[in-house]
Length: 241
Image (cartoon, rainbow, N blue to C red):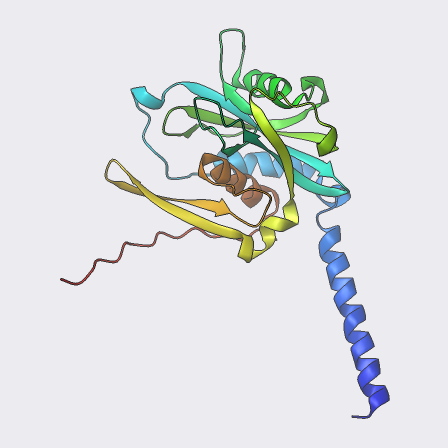
């Protein structure tokens, strides 16, 4: 192969690579994903999804709701997360979706999610396009219902967060979750049963716990052709005596 042929092949290869990268970027565009059919399909899949979880008890029967906030950040569809204040009594310093416990003024868990979002990160509930709700997920201390909503274009650095509750807001592009290197899992036991939940790394903060589980549920329903993270139970290895 002469030098000119090598240069030509290299140029063609680079052009193909650029086109493939561009095509993959386009699949995450609002035009490609924010269609009525995709939204309806996503909510149906979320409601149909069955996930192994803790049993409901008196200890975790209190109701809470969170918003799974899809948004456009720097022209990329992303999920928005909060880092909780380190001085909070519950889940301090952890990554979460905006949300919280239901109170007597809320007429529904959807209202809870929108109210808490407004209180925590300053997004007016009227500016949230709600797609729908998912199933109740049972946590260690409460049961939480996810509400999926689209916030539109967001400038994270200009958000007016409540510093008493939120230390930081950060966004993670959808394409980040499609890289297997960023998708891990954790395994734990609870009252004799073993559970495996996803965990996500290499973003600004590690995402784990029920927030990671809800992220997994949403991505599995929303972009199934590109998010293919599977969760497998790994049995503990018993040491030889």
